[in-house]
Length: 259
Image (cartoon, rainbow, N blue to C red; front, side, top):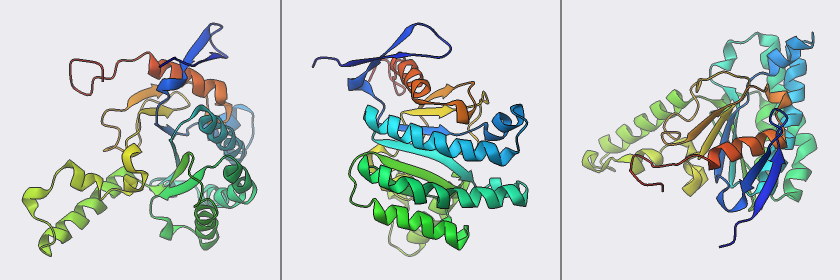
């Protein structure tokens, strides 16, 4: 098969990046970090960073879709984010409403399907309604999946999956000796992503090098890329640079040969 290459020039590196279009990661997950620090550097309120970050979500969604990514998972609001000041939480709860009210037509145009993982029943009614409408409005799209993690925490996800499995064992619906990795996979919130449930590439912006309770089970063999840019500064060229780095790595999945 003939390789198709896309050349990208990074802001930080003057050399051209080669992107092999035949080896684009199927599932890219991003921890969108640095909105507040981006705003503080500009002497703006933190919410200004979140507002700009929403525009970045739009740009990266389109860029990923055009590159042929199958799933783009974005860590939008964690179960721990409720600890932030109430004014900031209230603003964050309004962002999905604003985002989907303006962006759903573009998602449909680019054949992007919206999915959500997390306990959205705890979100304000207006936020829940915006999310459910976006899911419904894009249900017929069969291109890239834009998977938002909203009120999501991986430990909570694994805890809830464990409870479900235990209940099925107690009810006699499942034999304990039959519990395996597939059983757990099928009880996680990422089950809806099917064969692409596990990210190939996890990106975290803003220079922090931790996972922050995001898809802990699913990233067992993901390639990790930590970038210095704050999320509002991340763009299509940044995404291509991360993919180029991913493509230079050798994924062995515990074996001795590249798979």
